[in-house]
Image 1 (cartoon, one colour):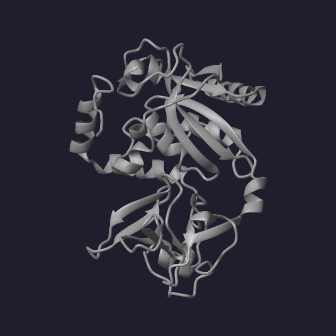
Image 2: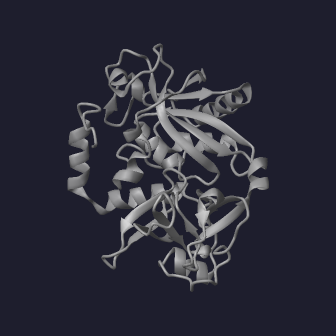
Image 3: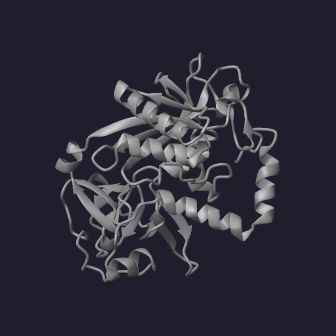
Length: 321
């Protein structure tokens, strides 16, 4: 259940945004989404399936009988969706999986009123449908996926992926995570608490303002697909780095703008970007600190906007560089 008592203003702001529903606000929201989601060029047949929710004929797809070890990612945005260990032969003629990468697939009642559609959580691309109760595997679930919606990455290539980690705090971690997670090259995100002086803080502890923690986002990314500077630039452009101990309607030290660097290379990148912003006239309030312990937040905070279907109320893309 959503907790709208994060600050004295939050309930009022959410109700206000829902009430006004203006075209200008909707357009701003759409621009924000478009600015951070990178998708690939699709063939007409891929577009028919992924965008227009079509279905490829059974036993014709590239992966229906594919048995190589590795991972299956979204052909549209590259998000990892399924692993070969969860793939099984169902006899249906489409790739079948009895599990998904946690948080990668969204379920929605199909327009036909009977089935459940599955889409990529990151980009919304159509994957297929999910079925339960067939008793085909011990997990008793079958993700029936179009091959055209997938791209396979062999295990050898997966092992070669050079991952790095970044930590950003910029107001409510719901919105920061939502926008960063949609960026091509980002492998995973978690929200949590960082920069405080107590161990194992809870959401309630942090909201009380006595722990010194900021609401932060951990970002694991593929450095061959996106570099740290590109990610940091985006962070500065999806929140207001000039606000002190707040972000929009959320007021408090836990909503401060802060970047936690893991090495000197990241530190130099941030110092460079802050210098560029100050050269443009921005009074940057973003703190720069050495990364310490990242305390993962409660499960109901993870991928909050993906599961609720809502949109960030205090984060939006604004070009600054």
